Every structure is written in C-alpha cells, then in structure tokens.
Image (cartoon, rainbow, N blue to C red; front, top):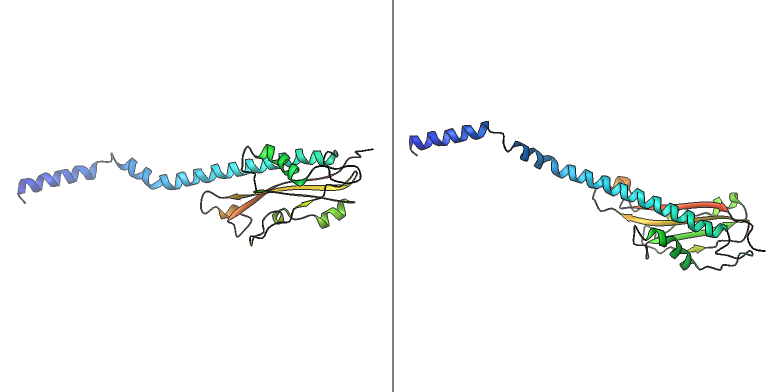
Length: 190
C-alpha cells in the first residue's frame, strides 16, 4: 500500500473515531428490544386486568338474575339452562374475549352462608383441570332465600414470554381470571 493511500486511510479512520453521528442509532438498537418487550408486557397486563374487570361485572349482572328469581322458580326448579346462563354472561364478556368454550361457570346454593363456604368451589378449580381433565359444570341456582354463589372463569394465555410471574395455573403458563358473586336470593315467587 502506498504512503498516500495509508495516510488517507488513517485520516478516515481518525475521523470515524471522533464521529458520534451513529451513536444514537446504536444506543437505540441496544435498548429497543427490552423497551418494546416491557411496553408489550404492560399493555398485556392492562388488557388482562380489564378483562378480569369485565368478567366480574358480567358475573354481577348475571347473579342479579339468580338473586331475583329469573333463572329459577320459588321452589328451586330451574327455568333457565346453564347454557343460556353462560350466554348471558358471554353477552358482555364476548366483546373482549372469545367466550365459546373458554368461559366456565359455577352456580351453587345452600341453606346458609356457612354451609355455602364449605361446599363452594375454589375459583382456580372451576374450569379445565391442570392435567387437562374436563370440569363438571355445577348449575344449581336454588330457590328463594337461599345463599348462592356465581363464579365465571377464563384462562388467559400470555402472549409475551416470561410473564409466568403473573400466572396462577399450570405452573404459571396461564392466569385463570374469574368473577365471583356471593348473595342471598330474594323472596321471589308466590
């Protein structure tokens, strides 16, 4: 290589070392991945919490139907099927999530609240089991003046990896979100 060519190369290299015009792009490239990941996790957490709020609200609205006797007669005989009751819950929740097959309901009653709490299912147990076993639907709204509970669950699959710290089911793979209402049926019927 000639001396003039070496000096030209040395000058270009020295100028490149002093230049910081690409530093911002390099710094952004280093922090962009973690930044967008954290931003996505925040958005998904917010959407998941909003979905849980919507499920809770829909359970409260559907529980009002149980409480006022719109789903059963005074003697406790059922006038609305569990499928129709689930459709009622899904009317509100279906705007946010796919309700078909993913929302599970539990409706049970007892003569006292003390007995109801001993027989009431854990919300994490309502829905498909951790081993994939099917959940047996409980739908017994009860008659007038009976203590009752309504639970609706939905399994949230995380879109972003490494969010298992928010998971509460299947070793953190998913989060089972639910809505819960406990009340006493009104003296409906004649």
